[in-house]
Image (tube, rainbow, N blue to C red):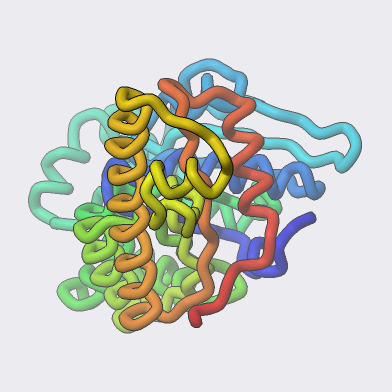
Length: 316
């Protein structure tokens, strides 16, 4: 099953504070869409090579690789990184600069040009994504965006350059990227958080920036690594054991009391942060389970993909 929102746009930007699992969510979403028959291109902007092995391939590079295929649906997942220097070279090629000159220009001038034009590196990467979307390089392009502190400047780069560049190729590129971002049939952003105060604060700031300033459509929020909500943790282990007719030793009671207090405290924090999201960012949301494993595997990614396959909850 594919949720209705997943096919709403051709480019899906996935972003969140570092450490919340946004890259893992991007990989799981790619799997979900491919299972339902989509040709998916997963593009890592920060060049995280680990997404390749997580999806059963080798570490990602700027050269595209096929990671997963689904014979039943005909879907597949391809992946690559988009480094700024390659995006610059592709831009020069698009503008008709020849091969040898293009390689020399890419190597020698990107740092100099980028230093004199803040935001240009981000714009070049977004421009490459825009070209991939324009040429229909995939049914769905999932962009693993930079962490939240860098995601806003990354996505804002087109509008920022529109404010300072009046004309020329940079302005044209900025206009075309801004047009793609504002078109809800072409782009949307999926924001990822943990149910913790700092990630939620950064998520709210990023959501307001993306929605109000750029007009970029917001997909449902994803709250990652959620503990199962267990109201029975309100009971002390001694009371729970008595109700169940189970006897506890003193050592068992002490261990279970410590564990249940920790679980209850975690649930309280989770409930408080979900309530904050209800109040401050009342968007539909998806809750992903906390996977208590030392290292994620492809099987774990399948579990997350299944959890994303449902229609999102609406705020209470």
